[in-house]
Length: 263
Ligand code: T3D
Image (cartoon, rainbow, N blue to C red; front, side, top):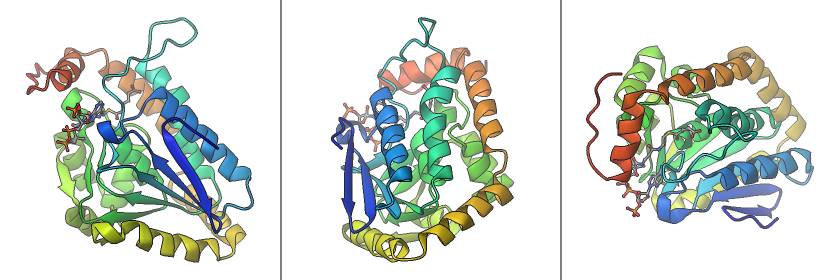
């Protein structure tokens, strides 16, 4: 399938999806969200696909929402971040969790904002030594979304999750590995080879058993994912109406330090 912002390649039962806007660290647009939804829907049904790999082109994995792309109006109404999350991002996160096949994120560079949480929604994270992760929503006055309020404390515990989300600090690959956010960190030039070794191994395993195990993990540790995604969308809508959000996004576009007022 030919996409505009996504490269989709299947080799030996492994589907590799590469986010492909390298000039902006694969920042997410509506087109990318629709293409991801489509590719994951096809992969779910395609019995020839037995493992998925998600990675980024160029030096970044994904820098989250494209802050220069305006939001498309929904049903002719004012663009709403809550609706944008519900219709754009949440279906991608749900599909990553619901697909009964292993999904590996090959984190080749910075994974930030929604990009970080898309990586955390995958089952396993292989990372390059150049990779980094940042829950930097707060730096533009937003709250973590894409399931981050669930995945992050689940993986690192509440105290560290609070620190990462409240500061928005970027952590390097070694620290992310130490915290359990990355399963393995490997030299940059071996990332795709090492990821595909693991993917090939998983693709040759009993896919149904892996899928049922994933279903059981979902039920055991994230049974309320739908409610979490919906609640995050509500909260993001509130956050997006603050002066600090307006200032944070303006400062990013103007390449300056934001001056937050706390409301
Ligand atoms: O709408 C909704 O539904 C709400 C959903 C929100 C979900 C979110 O993801 S909110 C978070 C959005 N993302 C960000 O705030 C990240 C913004 N980017 C950065 O802070 C930095 O770029 C990074 C820390 C990710 C990487 O820094 P660095 O120094 O390695 O790279 P850079 O030079 O800043 O970026 C390289 C280019 O990519 C640069 O373009 P230029 O100057 O070369 O023309 C930069 O502007 C562009 N870029 C990076 N991130 C984004 C982006 N362009 C648009 N949107 C981005 N998110």
